[in-house]
Figure 1 (tube, rainbow, N blue to C red):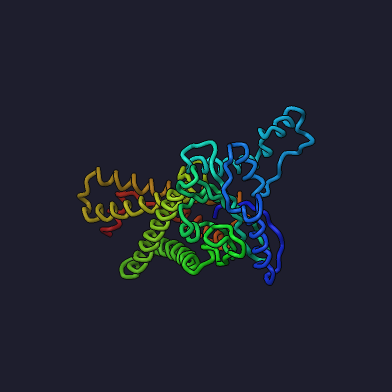
Figure 2: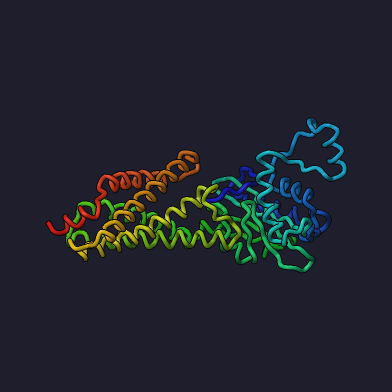
Length: 359
């Protein structure tokens, strides 16, 4: 789950809706009576400062500005944020410029989204942007994802599980506030999460079982392992497609989540290839040519390498973000490590596979 930055406060469950409604309606009058929904034409500096303030990020200490920065601030040329805060802002500002054809100045409306979970109400800004007065509208969130319509945002935003309050239709009007569960807290997402867990457990269990089972006992395990791999492949493809559809980078080098998705997809695809190649090899039997044996050895080694790389990536990410990772994810990682270790231990070359098939 991507991290959303915002302004947080403690609120009781009986009062969060009224508090969220008050917070949203404050924005209705931002810039003047009932002027909150009117877009502002912002240049690069004012855009950066608007994003930073809307997200509640800490600005530079003006006591340390010095004469030069003070002069720039008075003229409206100074960005008030630096370091980590500036990096967060850059992601959003860059996405806004890309959605608006690279223009430096664009029309922007700040929309407050209130997310409530376990006694904490977080205000997360959403930025409605467009190039010209009546050009295509985009909605940019604080992770740099963009949405082309209200429906797209409503169904596909990645806000954390909980309840949310938002301007009706993402338009700021007095008294027009809607409430709903966030997409990740709705029934379809919960079902998918359950199936993810079941498929992972089934895949690991079946994989370990197939190492010792044979004949009729192996058949249902093989089906379970294949079904788990098919589900995992589809999920990885869907998540990568969702990222691409909302402007997120798919580069695996700088993003741990992307690496996990690509490695998961690659591991499953290579696994399918290895299984098919092994079946063909065994069908050829002792007369299997050396090219088939070399290919099976290579693809099985590749499968092990990709699985090992994925496990290593997951382990490093879990250690680095231990406090943020659910307990069941840690358990699944431990199972995966145990499975991969045994998989390596039981690795067999093409010659051994053929010899064992004729025992």
